Length: 263
Image (tube, rainbow, N blue to C red; front, top):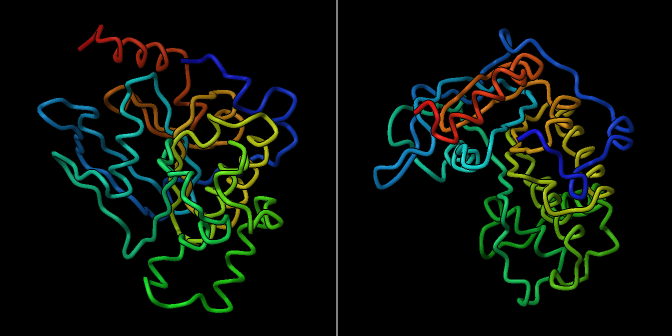
């Protein structure tokens, strides 16, 4: 679980180039998502059992764990795509979410431009029959500018490289201007330079007060840039400050729990 994939995540020399996120006192921060005894699963099989914890407003969280720990299922539940089989997930008021799944599922043979695809992030505001306002066009342009692809606005999605497509997906997340951003392995399929750029965008979102929750496998990145961590292994092993959570004892326990040694 501790092995880093240097081909798809920022390397040792790249990480120090970015400004590290500032930690916050989560004990006094306002809760934005709360879980109470949440169990997730289907057909009699549990993916996550009895998860209890709080995500605070403006926090920057990593969700980590071995393969099969239930990380993607956990994010699906947070965003509302999978209702808990047991327990409750509570939101602080009318919170807007933006979610980037691990696999985009796009039909890249469909002739859609980069600009139109990013503009679809405004669907909930615009609907099927209204045109974008001038302010909304500006939002789309700013999102593309942030990921460095404004000059690619007229390109078709199917002509993009994997790294360029991931940057477009980030732009569609950005244009939604959500309070909570959930990312599932956002750096896993891109090269090192793109990973560094996207990580910088994540840190900018956090600095602007967004709550960011990201499933990650690179523990070096997590320790360097994510102040809070949820360690999963079919259950919550620990949830709290990263340096406290990612100790060898907890990592050892997580590996064995996912292997079924202590179940």
